[in-house]
Structures are given as structure tokens and as C-alpha cells.
Amino acid sequence: MVGADDVVVGLAVGAEVAGGGAGASTRCSGPTNAGSTGPPSLETTPATSTANPARTSTVAEVRANRTIRRRARAPRWKTCISGLTPKRLSASCTSSRVRNSYTCRSAITFKYRSCEAGKERQVTTLLGAEDVRRAVTRIAHEIVERDRDLSLLAIVGIRARGDALASRIREAIRANEGVDLPLGAIDITLYRDDLTRIGYAPVVRESEIPFSVADRVVVLVDDVLFTGRTVRAAMDALVDYGRPRAIRLAVLVDRGHRELPIRADFVGKNVPTSPDDDVRVHLTEVDGRDEVEVAVHERV
Image 1 (cartoon, helix red, strand yellow):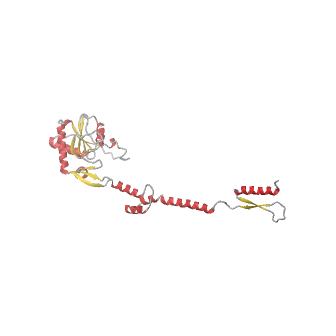
Image 2: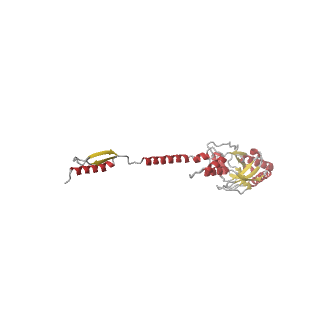
Image 3: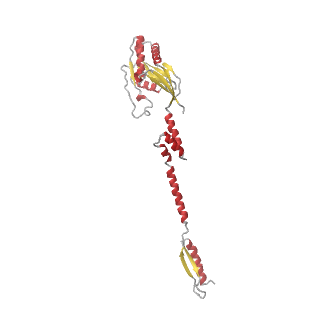
């Protein structure tokens, strides 16, 4: 038979188990003296927190240190590439330990490569002043040989150096044949297929064609024939003035690398080049001297 003392002890044990999660402990104490017959007393004492304060502070410190390291590391590459000279930039980026994918060294390489993209390695003169004069004279003779009826012939130069060459060809034909041919100049800026890429305010020059191109043999004159896109734009601009009987093309330099099915009828000089090279035509009317040179760029 279960006595009252057993019931009290059981209740005390249950209270201690249940109170362990609530933050309090219950202790059962027996009678204070052996002669006492009363029930044992229950004493409740507040329990200490089971959480570890040292562990909580350690986690906070780790998180704080991680945040500090992240903030210190993130702008390090920006500091290296902003407002520094190349020498200081190289020194600061070499000393810093950046583990990001976009490092200071890659920033230097990109900057130096972009600056060296236009760096010239070699400039070669293709035609001198006397060579340019001979090429113009030869083109003038070939034009007359191709079209005997000079009354139907007209010359139109493409700005900004083709018009100067067209004027020279006209003077050469007048010196040889004694005939003044109609002369015009055309600007192809608004007819370019890359008009949206060359800028928001392209420079548009005036086109001057003081004669009718209808039923005429028009000789377009340009300085350099490269991809053919300039000539295509010139033909589009020319047909806005009328329907020519035929369109011929005369160029001082043909460098190849055509992107359109266009071929020159009269060529002063054929020059094999690389697509990255620059062929520069200098004329006295524009540049103060007659010279054709090619600039070979470094291959990066």
C-alpha cells in the first residue's frame, strides 16, 4: 500500500523533471529530525541558465570579425585602380593580396593592353610626293582610254580626300586632252551603314554636284579602298541626284579585305595589308604634304 510519503516523493520527482526545462529545480527534503512524523517539505530554488555565456560571446565575436574582414577585403581592388599612376598602381597591387577573380594585376593588364592597342611598331612610306603625282597621271590616262567620249564623262570625289584627288585627275585630263570635265564632291556621312556607331553628332559636309548625273559616266574618286562600304554609301548618295549611265571607281590605294562585292576600275597602287594596319593618305590640300604610309600595329 502506497503511503502519503511515497506520494509526496513521487510528486517531487515529477516536479523536478518537469521544472528542469522551465529553469527551476525542486528538491525534496525529509523531516528535520528523526522523531518528526510530518510529511517531507518541498523546497524550490531557481536554476541557473543552461546557456553558456562564453559560447554566446565567442559566436558574436566571430561574426563581427567576419564582417570586418569582408568589408576590408571588398574595396581593396577598387583602391588599387582608382587615382594611381601606373607605377604606384603596380606597386600597390603587387603588395596587396587580393583573392577575387578581378584582381589588380588583371586591371593593370587590361589598362595597358587598351592603351597599347593604338601603339605603332613600324611606319612605312608607300608613296612619296612624286609617286602620288605619277599615280594620278596614270589614272587620268586610263580614264580617257576607257571612255573615249569625254562629253559624257564627269568626276565626283568622295570627301574628305577623294575630292582633292578628283580635282587633280581633272587637271591632268585637261592638261592632256584640253577638256574641262564636270567636277563634283559628295559627302556620304548620312548614307553610312554604321551611322549609329560613329557618334550622336556626326560631321556632315556639303555635297556639291553642280551638274546632272543622268546619262553620264560618273567616275567616283576615293583615296583608299578597304571594305567597300564607303563606296557603297557613295553610290547610294549619287543615285539620289539622278540615274547615271555608268559608275566607275578610281582609288589611289587598294589595300584589299573587301566586305562587299566592289572592285576598283582604276588603281594607283595595290598594297597587301593586314586588317589591323592603317593606310594613311596625306595630300597637300588637306595635310600639307603628299605621302602615303602604312602603320603596322603590335599584335597583342
